[in-house]
Length: 578
Image 1: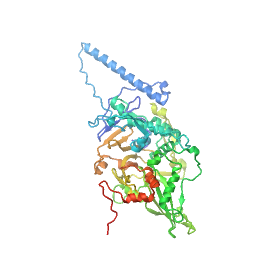
Image 2: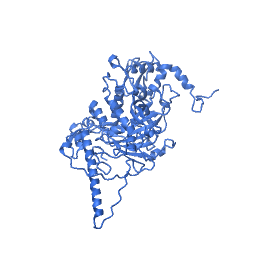
Image 3: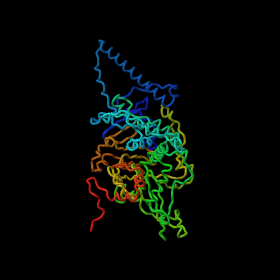
Image 4: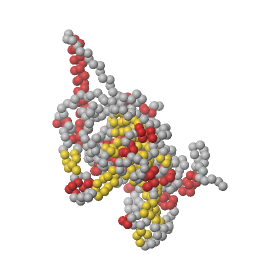
C-alpha cells in the first residue's frame, strides 16, 4: 500500500461500493475469501451529496437495499418467462453459496466476542490500532462495562456502560466526559457486535468509529483532519483524556498553584521509601482515576557528582515507558531486555547538560540513572523507532511536500479530492525523521520486570506480564505509512491481526511454551512493533503497589516479600544457610 495511506476506500469485491462498508474477514494465514459482487452503484444525486456524513451513509444503505430488492424481483420474473416459453432454455446456474463474513474457516463458525473490524475513515488506522489494543485490557473493560444480559454461554453475554462510569465535570483539563463516554460507547459496541452478527446474520460486520474520531478532533485540533498521525501521540492523548474525564478529584475545591514534582536531596532529607510515598501522595492530590489505579507507576532519577559523590534524587510518575533501541551486534533482531537494560543504565551527562553541585559549587558532568520504583497493572512500552536529524539545507521552502488533503465529503464521494499543499512540520524545520527498521523480539507470555525494579514487590501480584496488544507501523515516518494491530483476545486468549476491517487469526496457543512459533506465524509483528501493551499476569496491584505500601508501611511490605511462597507452597531462598 502507499506509504501515505491517503487512498480512497478500496472498491474491491469485498467493499460495498455504495456504503463503503467492508465485511470483516477472519482468516488463518490464507487468502481472503472473495465475497459476492454487490449490485452496481446507482448514480448519486447532488441532494444526497449535500447531506451530513451519517445521513449520507443511511441514504446509501437504503438505495442499496432497494436495488437488491428490485433485481431479485426482475430475476424471478425473467425465470418465470423462461420456463413458460417454448424456446430452448439454457440451464440456470446454481446460486453462489453465501460466504460467511468471517471467512472460510470451519473452526470459526461464529463471530468472536471483542473481535471486530474498524472502518478506516481516511487515514484513521492510527486510531483503529490503538482502540483494538485498549479494548482487550480487562481492568479497563471491567470498570467501563457491565453485563446487561447474563448467559451461561459467554458468547451470548450483552454489555452496557457501567454505573461506575462517573464523569468529573469540574475538571478544567477534561472534556466534561465526552472523550471517556465516546470511548466507553465504542468499547460497548465492540463487545456486543458479535451478537448482531451471530443472531441477526447482519451484513454490517464492521464498526464505523466516527463518533470517537469526531470527539477526539473536537478537543484536540491535531486530530481534527484526515491526515495520518503518530499512534503513540494518539494513545497518550486518549489515555490522558479518559483519566481527566474520570478523575475523582473535586477540582472546584482544589488549588492549582502547587508543583506536581517534589525534589528532595537524600543527604539532608528523607530516604527513598519515604520520598516515594511523599511523591505519590502529592500526585494523588490531583490524580485519582481508573488510569491512576492501573496505568501509572513511578521511576526514580538519581544524579550524583563524580567529584564529591553528592547525590540528588527525585521520583516521577509515568504512564508509559519510552525505550531507546539498542542496535544488535550479532543477532538479526533487537531484544526487549536489551532495551530495558539500556534504559536503566548509568550515563554521564555531557557539557550541554551539566548539573550544578551545591557541595562543589560548580556545574559538573554528573552521573545520571533512571530506575523503575513500581510497575502498574497495565504496562505500555513505547519503542523509539524514530530518530531525528538536521538536514543540510536550511531553506524551508525546499521541504514542502504536496499530498492530498481529504475531507469527509470528498471521502464519501466518487469525485477526486482536491490537491492541497501540505507541509510536513518536521521537514519545514529542516529536520528529517529516520526509522529504525530492525526487528524487535519481546516476551509473549511472561515479561519479568523484577530485575528492573528498586521498590518493594507484592508477592500476591508479582511484576510478570503477558502481551495483550502490539501497535505496528509500516512506512518511513510515524505520521505517514500505515498502522495495524496484533492483539490477544482477553476471553479466549487467542491472537488476531487487525488491519482496519481485515482480521487474521494467528495459529498460536497461549499455552505453547515455544514462543518461536509465534514469530513464525505472525509475520511482520517484530518488524513493525511500535507500542506494546502488557497486562499483569497474576493479581492486581493498585497504584503499582503504592496503596499497600502506604497502608501497611514500607518495612511490612518488604517483610511480606521475604516471606513470599511460590505456587507450590515453598518459600523463596535468597541465600544458603551456614
